[in-house]
Length: 122
Image (tube, rainbow, N blue to C red):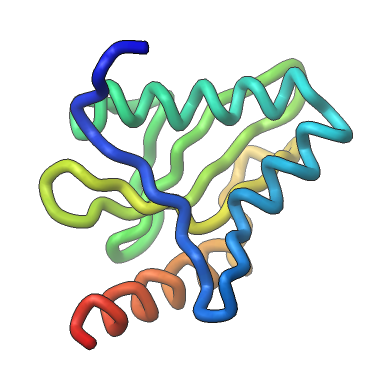
């Protein structure tokens, strides 16, 4: 496997739970092709990073961006932020049929970002 230019970290809550990992695991069981597309999206981010633009990324709010792709009628969304020059932190993911960011997941990603920053300062 080729070396990537950027690194992807899956946000881990203080109790050790990793929402993106849980989401991908559940997706692998219920819809393996969509799970593979979500992993592919993360690989695209790891390879192209800040060079990505629409239709793959869209700024949502504050530091939060949306990594996105369609598979069939489903919209895959992964909410993330950039940490430093070469690190991206994925906080949450979803598959839905609407073409709109889920406000609850965006709020969660904002809180995850705040928690991540606080732990970096400790």
